[in-house]
Length: 463
Image (cartoon, rainbow, N blue to C red; front, side, top):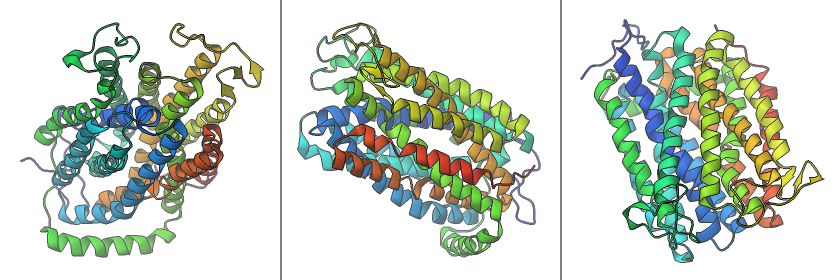
């Protein structure tokens, strides 16, 4: 197997960069993983769970929030440790394979989440947590391969292209589900007016539930080129020695972190604004389902439009990243998210910014209501800003972190992206449960974006 040559001093800097096919294969990891976020956590399965498996949408949002919080806590605690061990052992691909397997297993088990059966809720939430842990840890090790793939002045475009490619994969997977698999229970027809493939039953929501196994199969197929064509880092130490060396290195890094003001401040900012973004994506579909009464086809169509906006946003953001630097891209994205998040709270099914409008007509055309169209526009702004925010964040970390400990720092990056991200969904769940109001639960997200932006201004970006 081809591996990346390392300098004798220990810094993992390639003497030459791999071929184009290796880079493209790495990019396809984002394509492989994105349907989990598009189909499961945002636009299809999460709203289905809240609307048809849980007793009511508010309780469903609360339960989903608690499961997201539990998975986020585990990711937060283990990411830096596993990253440190991976840096000491050298290899990345075995870790991606192991955690990718958890994604496949957990996602596939979601097929058993039948509507109106409360007995499946604990097992379903456990499967969701397992899959979430798998996809997040696999992403940590995949991100750590970036510096060895292209020169430093092309990292922004690589990161942005990866996110954009992921969005395209999410769009296609969503079109596949809405157009051919998931049907309206009342009409028995998909978005394209077809009967569901494979005889999937609309009444028992098999088209929604199939998103779990589909996500697992999709990941296996499209992550395979990365394992075959993208070079891995060379092996260094056996796992037992890597464990000892990795934990020692992590202790040293944590001790040095207070002296590295910009890195520490950025990780803190990332911790806060990522919490807001993850919560916004996790509950945006659920919020729309409760506000407008949308079902799978409406939410999925909404998701397609968001993903298209995200594709162009991530691709264009990658170009801006290389030209103006990732810090400016992050700041601009946060400003857009602040505006959109605040405006969404002022949109209801019969009002926009306190102005009364006609509510959607029952049985009317898709997104016929003025408030629904306003929600679409604001959602597209969120999609267009979310991609560049995440892509530029991993670019900025690469600029700030020591090259010989890049996986360890991506572990810390995942830590800061998760250590409060379990608090965000938890707070949304608690506030929603206490107030029985989805709007009240979502209102706190603007605080996360504003605080993250304030901290970002204190980061000094390396060239």
